[in-house]
Image (cartoon, rainbow over all chains, first blue to last red):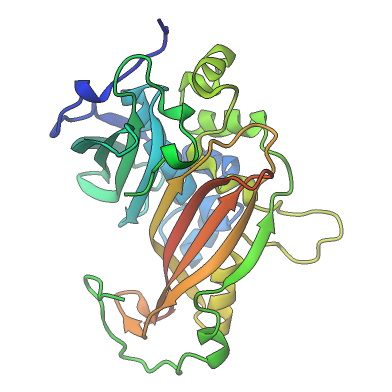
Length: 161
Length: 181
């Protein structure tokens, strides 16, 4: 019996909503993310540079957004959840002073030919009611207690649709 | 490549795609190697930046039970191939995703944005791994004009491997290089 959270596919249903997550964004949020992801480009830490590029402020870089999406999904699904794929569409920059709102919906649940359980989600990152980034995520969940997607290798791991 | 919303055929005429750029399509143009092994401190710094408390990355017991030892968050895949800002003897900044910057230069398109990005995850990345990637140019579009300006879309595939040759993931980037209106 594990002490860690396990969400199994049979406890998930199409149309389920993930709990919302609201995060205020400061310049520190953006610079921390840029430096942690080793992104030294000045548009992520130098407001004057961003202004000269026609952008109103420094903005959250893509790898940091990816990490926020990962965090959002595994907050819900627990550490046994293993990401298969993510696809982003960036529509609007996230800048200091914004509040990010993450909302997710379960679109599909399936078991593949190897017995791996998959959940497909759409996660919307919005600011003031407008989508900043939409993300389609495919994540493997245990099909039952005792199953662990992280143990899958080679032909037993099929993350692509 | 299909036309995107808000996209028009080019208003400003761009030169034909040069032959040597056409020849780059479908080829692996760059191989990059990490400058340091995957390390715990970057994992913690990254998790801290997103207030990410998954016990896999903070508790040794969780990592041992679930992933057979410590790993890095999958979405950090590109972090390990990003070059240092400076190293001794370096006279110009090394750039990640170099194919992208090569195309900007070769096509004389000074501005560029990434419009879509996808990633697929393979073997978990483990502390101590040394990673490499291969960058392949998948396609370049005809000239297009949108609200940003006139330019071309291109798609770059990046495949990542560890020191054992195991596939750890692939990214693709849909980019738009352009001249401002």
